[in-house]
Every structure is written in structure tokens, then in C-alpha cells.
Length: 266
Image (cartoon, rainbow, N blue to C red; front, side):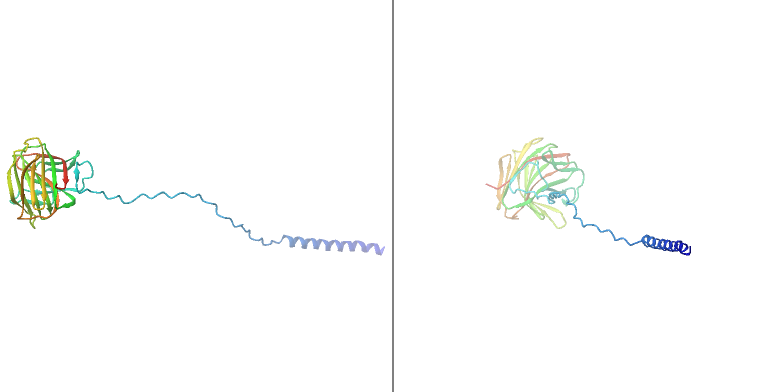
């Protein structure tokens, strides 16, 4: 009977020991463990679509090409034709930097218009692209205003003076050396003068021509040679060409220049 009583005790001890082992294993497995940081496979960047670069536009506009001898009909670029003004209302005519009175001088409707609405306005326009030693100038002028005015053709223009062929509606012409003094006062030195019965008075179209060749100056009115002579007093060598229109005491003066032909003397 003594032997049988010890078996339950041994069983109890064995059971308690087993429970302790299970508890230890459970505690050990529940403790947190550090997880390895996730790694990412290196990836190549996705290919980008190649976009063609736009062709750059030119930033510089090609400079216009100007002709030395040609017919100007005022249908294209007229930026080389620039004007200046002489005030003839003073004791001595004065070249002025600013306009006075009322006037319009410029290209309009494929013509070059001189519209002078105040007295004593002597307006000139010159072609600035070239200077000429020997040149012929043919101008077609349409008088659309009063009959009292004059049209001028000039050659060998510089800032200090020029030759001026002045043709008036009253049938007279004058040839001057127009001198610019240091104070911008003008002195018109007379060289030659005379009459031209070929001038058409009133609202008519006239063609005036001059030739400046070496020392010889020549004037034509509607195809008729009025005068040709050697000029030795001032002996201007070269310069620009141009035209002018003058108002006096009857207004308004309106002259349209249809064409200007710049050519070499033949």
C-alpha cells in the first residue's frame, strides 16, 4: 500500500515540470525580434520620349538692299528718303530742326506728297543711301494746289550746302549754291537764272531733269534743255540727291512727286 501512494506524487512532480517548460518556451517565442529592413531592387528609369527641339527663328531681320541707280515709285521701303525744313519767314532763311505751321511731307498712295499749309515752308527730301559725284535726276511733279509754288531738284547735297535748281510755276528758274552757315542760317547764292516756256502752269504734271557731271550743270524742263554750263565758283564734288517744294504767300501748296529716276549721265 505504501508503494501505490508514491506514484501520484511522482506524476504530479512530472506534470508541474512539464508545465514550466511549456511556459518558458512560450515566453521565449513571444519576445519581439528585429525584422530586417526591406530592400528594393534597383530599377532603371523609364525611357523618356524624345521630342524634337523647335527650329529657332532668326532674330535679325535682313537689312534691306538699296540701289544706287533706280526708279523710285514709292511703292516699297521709303525709309531712306528723309526730309528737312527751312523757315523762310525770318530775315534770313533758317534751317530748323522742328516743324512749324501745318504741313505733311511723306510717302502716301504710292507718291511722295508735299502738302504745305503755312507760308514760308521750304521742304526738302534727300535720298540717304548713296552719295553721287556724277548723276542725272528726273522728277515727275503733279501740282495739285495753288499755282504759286516752286519745285527744286538738288545734287551734291552735304550738311554744309548743295546745288539747287529751282523751277517756279510762273515760268522762271533759278540755280543756286545753297549754303548752310554754322548757325543754320541759309544763304542762297545765285548762279544762273532764266525763263522756261515749257513749264505747264496750273494743275498740271511737269517733268524736271538735272545733270551734275564733273563741273557741268544742266537743267531740262519737260525734255527741253534750258541751260548747261560749267560751275567753277563753288566746285562742289559729291553728295546726295533730293527734291524740294516751297510755299510762299498763297496757300495751300500741294505737289505730288510721282516718280524719281536716279541714273548715270550718258
